[in-house]
Image 1 (tube, one colour):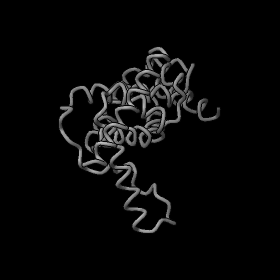
Image 2 (cartoon, helix red, strand yellow; image 1 turned 60 degrees about the vertical axis):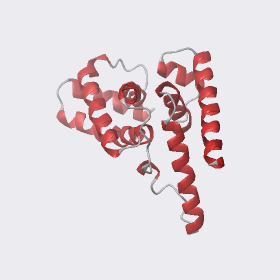
Image 3 (cartoon, rainbow, N blue to C red; image 1 turned 90 degrees about the horizontal axis):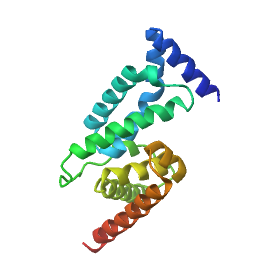
Image 4 (cartoon, rainbow, N blue to C red; image 1 turned 90 degrees about the vertical axis):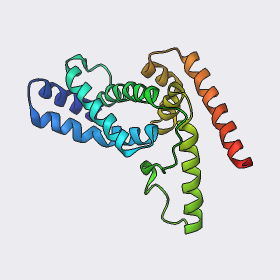
Length: 186
C-alpha cells in the first residue's frame, strides 16, 4: 500500500511540475518496463524504443491517472498497448535467433555448467515460441506468467472479457506446445 500512495504522491507532484518527482517515477518503473519489452520484443533496441514510447505516453497522459488503481498497473497497460502496436508492425516471419537478455543471471548459482546451458537453451526456445504468437496471445502469457496476474486481472488489464482471455490463453498454450514439439522432432 505504501508504494501505491508513494506513486500517487509522486504523480501528483510531477503533474505540478516537479522534475524530481517525474525522475523518481521513471527510475522506479523503467527496469520493469524495459524487461517487459525485452521479453515481448526480443531485442534490446526495441525494448528501449518501447521504454521511450511508454514514458512519453505516460508524461502526456499523466493527468488521466486517477489514482484508483496502482500506478505500476497503469504504466504496464500503456506499455502493453504500445508493445502490441510494435508487434503488429513487425514482420511475423522474421526469426528471432538472439537470446533474451532479460533472462541473464536468473539461473541458480548451484547449477553446473551443463545444467545452466540446458536451462538457457530451454528459455530461448520458450521465448522464441512466444514471439511467434499473435500479439494478443503473447501479451496474455506475459501478464500471466511474468507478472503473476490472474486471468480475471489480465481481462481487466486488456479491457476484454475473462472468457476471451481464457480462450486466447489456452489457444496460446496449444500453439506453444505444437511449436515446441515440432522443434523436438527436427
